Length: 127
Image 1 (cartoon, rainbow, N blue to C red):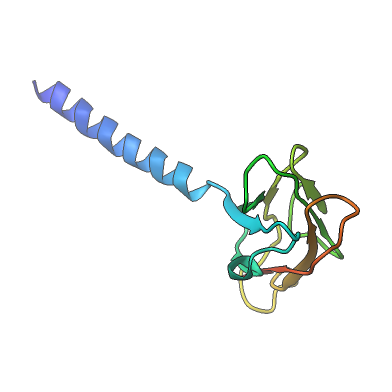
Image 2 (cartoon, rainbow, N blue to C red; image 1 turned 60 degrees about the vertical axis):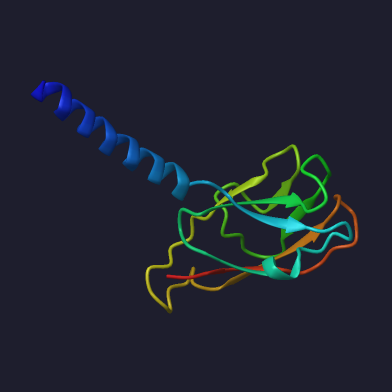
């Protein structure tokens, strides 16, 4: 009886920790409207090392979108992202304290498609 009770507690703790880690790693979705602009609430997104960021169309998950970082990218996967080909950015820049080289604003361009009218939101990396 004691072993079963201990096993249930250990399983409960393990389940809680694993669900917390899964939730922490779920992508933060930035929404793009039908004109290609990132919606105003997501124009300036604050992130930290290890965050996962993805984009989606506000009017439907199956609609196309495209983003490209104009200079440096905070993403491990590179500078260009689009629906259907690498849609998640894993922030990999070092920003432990204010003043670190990675602690800055990373500008990117957003559109509904590659070659479309581009807009200029940003991702700000915080310590």
